[in-house]
Amino acid sequence: MGTLTRKTVFALLIVLSTSGLAFGDALCNYDDTSQSEGNIKKGRVAEKEGKTLDALLFFRAADTICGNRKEAREGIRRIGSKMGREAAAKGRIFTGKSIFSTVPDVDCRRWVRAYDVPNPYEPRVPGLCIRQSGGVRVQLEPSAGAYDWYEATYNYRESDLLILKGVLSNTGDIAAYEAAQKHFQARLKLQDNGYSPDPQHLLELLKVASSNAASFLAKEEKEFQSSKDTERSLIRLENAMKWAVYGAESDRGKVVNRALDRAEEALKGNGISNLYDALEYYSFAGEADKVQDVAERADELGLAALNDNDPVTALKYFMLSGNRELIEKTRPLAEKAQKAATGTKKKKGLPSPM
Image (tube, rainbow, N blue to C red; front, side, top):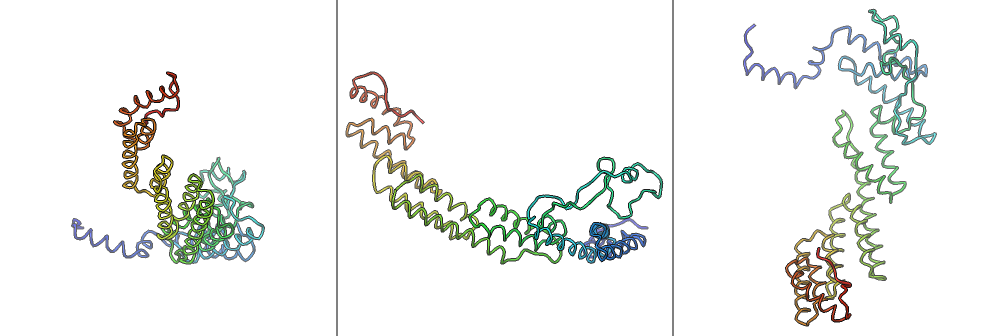
């Protein structure tokens, strides 16, 4: 045989990458395919006889590149769908359990320890014994939930629907909603022939996010008009943004615009509290330039206070702006003014440098 050239290797790679079935056939011999077909037949028989564990294990054993994977997975899906419905009917939805559990078994331990070929303790069903803990027997986990069954048996659409129902049953639960978002984001990366996330499910999630964001904005408006409580207002805006990040871009824009409106309203006054409120709203909105504008305004008001011979007030403005040079310049004057006002050398009420 001649030396493989670069062109020959490249051509071979193209053939292998475009001929998955042919490549699979090349890896499998007659015994492999016959065994896989036999497992499918045994799985069908066990399924008809109501032997769920046996049927599932036979189908799983046939779910290989050497067998009829399509038919094997159809069998797995049928069983998983049935078991999932039964679990849901009993109220077991999300349990976080595996659909399999294990129990000690003498024959499985003997199977692990035997070195004869063929192994006289070979399980009657492939996968019934596993080597864990020196040999244990597999059984169906009776406490597994519907979601656990659907996920483990390729019934992705059914588990998607369960996730969505969980969100819609309590639309204000942000933890459940974020878990659903992670679920569907992972689904977008899932590669399984014949499956893709239902766009309607994703749209329903977006609607829930938009609705909650709007609800928190409405609460913020009502409460702020009656109390002018900046701290509570910011909490409501933060809650709204937690939902808005999962909604439409316009939802996020509405939250940011509300914060900007509150900042502009705060700046109608020149008091220290007004500027602090504006700073918090602009910071929340991510408006760095506006934050700098407020700092510059604080410096201007501080200098004006110095000109009015009020270094104590001036220092407060400079502390807000973070202007260290003016803070250091004004602090001694403020201390002196306060001593004169109180008639004592004790410093009281002066802010510390940031």
